[in-house]
Length: 346
Ligand code: NAD
Ligand code: WQD
Figure: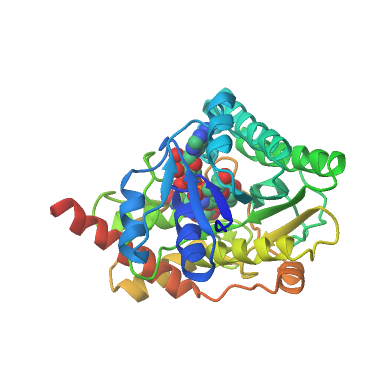
């Protein structure tokens, strides 16, 4: 009998690639990826192979193209579950180019959900985001916290994505769906051989830190120094990408083993710890031994002051909690930055 297949959309991307590694190393599924490399490199699959010894089959198609999606599902007959990572994810770009985000993130989701119905695939996991909470005052945020207004088109696509999935789950009771709301995924695989490698210019804190330390960015700015927080800088819930990856395996087991309370569940994926920008920088300096060239600058428009997750529901229901510390997040991110430098030289 053929092995059951898990289809990973966005498998060449940052979180998708780390999840594929964990799936290969911890499960017995056949893994197939679909990624058009719109924000990732072809090298990802070489890197996965170097770490795991396995070559992953990838369909380089645009998930917004319904006829290509149909061809994929017609060829892959043993798909038992889908982890849907593929989306555009830059908050600032989404503000500048709303159509790009509304179209890509929603059309691809609808095509995949329609394919689930047509091909009787009943297990679906969606990459959502803490950005769905908007500017929320009561911390830590819980899955049933009332969502604030979406602060960007990107965040709106995640709120809308959850609503669309909820509608499908209501209309089709055999479809088991989970939305995982990631907080701030950072760091890299412990081997240092794979990590975040976006085509777009980095704007997230940790890649900016490592690129400053390696000299690719001359000086970085800490956005805001007089927020009402313990050191005046914003607070976030950073989570190691491998912890995020492992949570997907837990979520898969949860739905495949029939443990869901209803056929649409939401879980926060965070560590539960709020970390300030300066604390993150200090952790980086400590583990890398590098002195970071940074200045305290103006606030970045749209930043929430503080957000971190209540982790009790995902701990209780999924039996999952984070294992990696902030130091390990920084250490692996730095190892990956050094590895990229080595790759560029060779
Ligand atoms: P990423 O950009 O590294 O990976 C996404 C992948 O999807 C890319 O490889 C891209 O080429 C592919 N893709 C995008 N649109 C596609 C399409 N139409 N057809 C085929 N492939 C397509 O991003 P990531 O950080 O790995 O994020 C994965 C998911 O998690 C996204 O849905 C993102 O919104 C969500 N998320 C990410 C973060 C984060 O901080 N990284 C936080 C919360 C949620
Ligand atoms: C973290 C902190 C910045 C860069 C975004 C999305 C969210 C989710 C995760 C997708 C903030 C500060 C940053 C710099 C800085 N992604 N910072 N200097 O904005 O919390 O979340 O990514 O779903 O939806 O909104 O992440 O890494 O950009 O910023 O001081 O050069 O670091 O102000 O306080 P953010 P981030």
